[in-house]
Length: 469
Image (cartoon, rainbow, N blue to C red; front, side, top):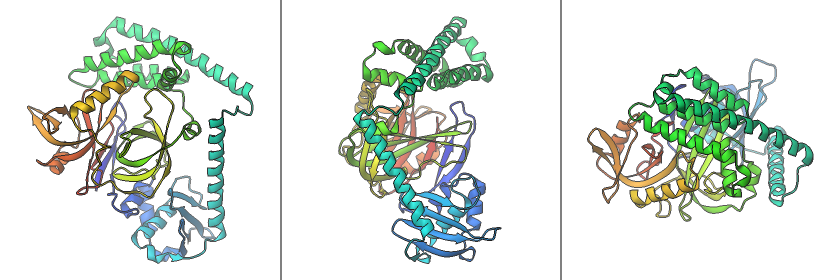
């Protein structure tokens, strides 16, 4: 078992719940991890009884069953095992609902209780609709790849111009705000309350520049980050000032760098356009995940490492309210498949195009990991030069846990070290796993500290901690 902790950039909204080992494709713990909240998980466990179900069945691609509720007709519950995806005829707005959770808990406990049978019409029709939507999505991606214009190019151009005008106004306003902040000095900025920062961030959201809002929140977090906060605040101010300067000169930038600036400002990048890019086939290790929560929006970063190509890939997922994050990408597993990268100078953000069934990650092969701390830092410096707004970079290293004075760090075979964040809450869990032996450690590096994510290898094959810095 392991713990995952959700935490907002300023330390609010702290949540914790257990997450499962990944050595089996379906376990009861993994099913419960898909629940949108603890109440749904508890209700689903109450429904995981054969006496509450009828017509349980399974095929190569789905499981289904009927659950008698308070109404006259039983609820039709079905699960597409390939994603997984859930569908139920109950009126619940939660996804998955308690019936879907209960059905999958029974399936994880005893798959033989589900008779192999032909899919009933209400299952077949639902699966067919999912295939149709998938085909339409692929068609849109092909159109994006061919450069086919939108159905109403004039309206699309008008919307784009209006958005750019709002963002330009937001950039100008943020420049005035930042200059005033610098004029008053760091000490004055640190004394500002949360409302001061929230107002400034909200103004950037209103200007349709959410990337600037995130930069302001990171600056706020730096001012309350404890010892050495002045250095971290200066770094965030420099990054924000550079982004504002680049934002007003978008037309004069190279196409790839302009895409980076637009992404940093908060312009969304189309998944269809990414899927239209050539896919990179490899064995991909899902070496670590971090989940951040801000208000009712959860954002998950999944770091993938290619065993043959040596490429790093960042897969982002978002979920609002009770909606679940994509359950098909599980930390501590690997899969054969194709990954498509979004356009940009760095080429790290990606989307999974195709993948095989998940398997335990095992011992990473040489192409996937960093051979030394020095090599890793050189790679980080090169990436930072291409993308100056890079906040985190993934590490996969065979290293030992070490203690230098009052600080924990990781040490490679050459004796070079990287410090672990002093506020990292699972340091003793890591110490108990690593002991005095070298381990395969995945982590995020923020330029100052490491945030450990997972210990990999045949002895573990599981995530021991998820933490949002």
